[in-house]
Length: 443
Ligand SMILES: Cc1ncc(COP(=O)(O)O)c(C=O)c1O
Image 1 (tube, rainbow, N blue to C red):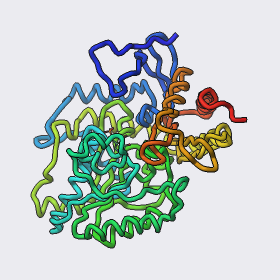
Image 2 (tube, protein in one colour; image 1 turned 90 degrees about the horizontal axis):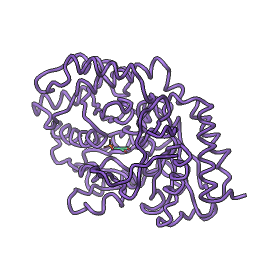
Image 3 (cartoon, helix red, strand yellow; image 1 turned 120 degrees about the vertical axis):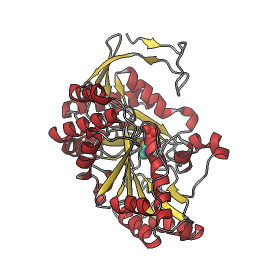
Image 4 (cartoon, rainbow, N blue to C red; image 1 turned 135 degrees about the vertical axis):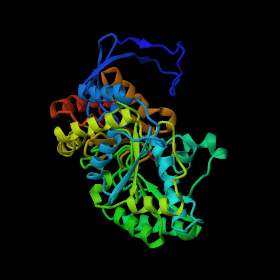
């Protein structure tokens, strides 16, 4: 029997009318609540738990760092964990001679990236550039700057009067809009020209769409065409790898699938595996140096930037990923997961598309395969399927609004990268049962 903590305590949560089990501990891909019920952590929440639960190596590294020096202010000191992590990440990040700035969440690194882009442009003598062009149906975070470059109407509407709404262009979404990468990059170019290239600092996008669209992979000509447009107009390219970075899609970085070098890359969720709230902004040494020479300092910071315990957690996470070859596991088992989902659900009359890369897959539901009409938002289909899977002991991720910002249901699967094939089989079986319960077998 599941024991649910009812919402009468002194905590409040984002989803308010929902009682949640109290988790006692986690181990590998599993979580156990206080009644002993087991949950497969099939998406690590919002794609966070890359190396699994209960990794004593990470806990030990964090404890050792906390004992040595739990906190030092980054304006005044450095520490070995921060320096070593940066040296090791420099070998992995697809930016020439990168430099790293550490913060505590995805929203924070996005805020950091857009402010860094602005300051790079100022330092280059391009002070009129303060627009960050972005994409509709995207998500970059909940703070007002990050929300200003996000494209999720439901999250933005209450705060529209409080934020700067940046120009949005259409994202790649082959299932619903047939457009080549060149055409979509053409929309970006039109937007830059409409505002005036001398006003645009950067373009920000997720290399593979995350939670808003649910694992949409762009056409192969998209990223090279976007890079060309950005170069043509002196616009910096920011790759938001908060969700798809750190091996999630079968390469270290989503952008690696197209061999593109962004000017700025940010990541967070999987960086410290969920053991510490952590993320980084990476930029070219040459751009950081331009700021140093022309502006003196970067006008940004934060009390907990470059946190030593976060750096120790990220370093230990990185070492596990390398030792256990988890990026390779993500690539190999990702292909199998895609095939399993396609076999189990692809033919269901209410499944519009199964899509993804590596160990990040989305299943989009429609009323009818031919019309691709989404279910009305009021049906709360994704939540319904999510709830049914959850009750059966599988926690996946869900999202609503992919079709038009409001309607459109996606379930996302993204287990820890340590998952095995046998465990994937069990996950897909439970998810299929939940879909059948919500929508019928469709036979
Ligand atoms: C691509 C992307 N960027 C930024 C964020 C914001 O991250 P956080 O929730 O850690 O602030 C998210 C979170 O889902 C994300 O998926």
